[in-house]
Amino acid sequence: MFLLGRRLLASRRTAAGLLGTAIVAINLLSSPAGTGACNANQPPPTGTDGKVAKSVYDFTATDIDGNAVDLSKYRGHVLIIVNVASNCGYTDGHYKEFNELYREYAESKGLRILAFPCDQFGGQEPGTNAEIKQFAEGRGVKFDMFAKVYVNGDEAHPLWQFLKQRQGGTLVDAIKWNFTKFLVDKNGQPVGRYGPTTSPLEMRAELEKYFNQ
Image (tube, rainbow, N blue to C red; front, side, top):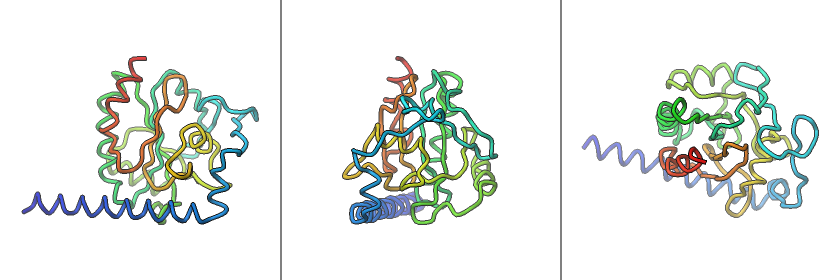
């Protein structure tokens, strides 16, 4: 009965996440601002130096403690870049599996995970950066946490504009829900995009492919 209850709870969370994704997608399609933000004719994002970005290494981001991070520090590493939220139905499973991937591959293969909190989907990341950091630490997170950002709209972080342009989504390129994951190769190029229903552990085969390149 306990196992059945857990399965039912997991199914409900997945269904809720799918419903949320569908609602966001519909809103994006019906919103001039949303569709405009995903127009293929949108100018390419520029890096920190003001030039057209050619890789994720051309960007700077702010970490969860407020420090500027030049993303060129990740040169030569396979990356997972993900938008996270503390109060989402996908949160527990994703943090658990990200921790597992990080333990398995950070030292042996050089995997780096870059998590960007975002409150644009259902208001599920309402806290301050300090509160988000405390939440993540309570779940044993060792991978890199960044300050809260926008991932859609005019205020979207340039890195996320770049990721969306390089790896477009279904129907629209906009991020549709929490825990959208981008796989980046050792040259800083986005090579894969995975929605929240794809668990981190399901990315293992793709990770192994890029570790070996």
